[in-house]
Length: 387
Image (cartoon, rainbow, N blue to C red; front, side, top):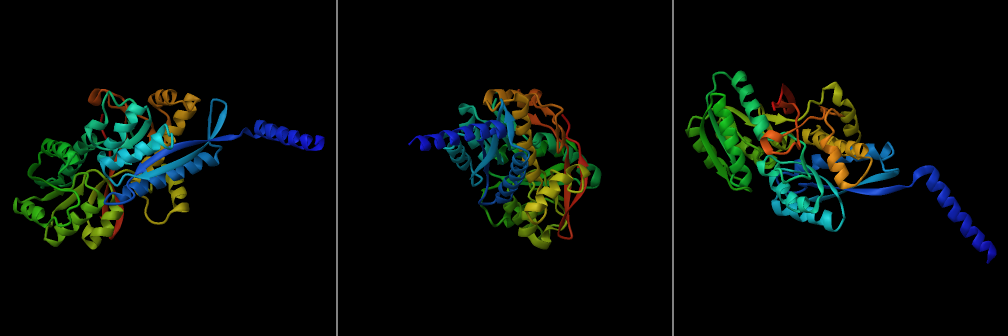
């Protein structure tokens, strides 16, 4: 009996010594919400991949060190189905079942609005992206938007189009008939008017529509020379591109928001040739080669810009843990607000939004115009987003 007790005590002592010398790592769950089914699947998969790369890098480097403890990040992700209800359901599960205090995603206004309806009252930090102005308000103290929205990039894109196509005058806009389209389409109209375009067609459709021929035919009858696809989900945008070309539309087609070029290539096939889109990064840029290497070590195919955005968001959250020297949500939230100048894959952190939204939680960054050429995504221009 005495020998058994001695063995037990030796084992306990070894555990204590090992724990002291190596630093036992606790698990820190970080939630992820993204579209893994439906028309926005490319966005959700991109988020998942970008966040996975960041989490793996952080853990390989020793995890999160805060408050004298070491934490291993664990990603817990749920599908939002690109709906507000899906965002609410996913957020409720993450908060009430998994107990997370930090969430990366979703992508897109419907699931983001559904998510923050749960997370703001629960005081859970969210780093997400959706273009609706309702996402960024003084009351949303725990919500940070990690991608510039339509009111930042639409005017810049319209100015670029004015310079690139000086003879073009007439624009047609097709957007979804929901809170997103109703909010964002007027911003596009305003941006095009400011750059001396005439918006001759501005109509909406119900999400899930497969046949856009009537809309496109009416737009062509108005003499539109440019088709603006707004922030439509990639699957639906791909159908619009394909059907527009099949109906004989010869003008420029651009999507100012919601980049999903690989899905558009898949859906539209050769009809995607010449399609233009707002995009998030240039894979040939020397400053992103570390990410490019990490992505290609894990995944095949082209690198979606949204994956880089959520890699960046996860890295920013890690920087906040370090700055706060804590995983306490209030301390981390405060640290996030003070990260200006911190180096990231997109350059130094720049928070803005106080004048527009009454809260300085909007990440500012440059962006790109991409073109589909010979079935591949090519960078056509880099554009600076103004304050």
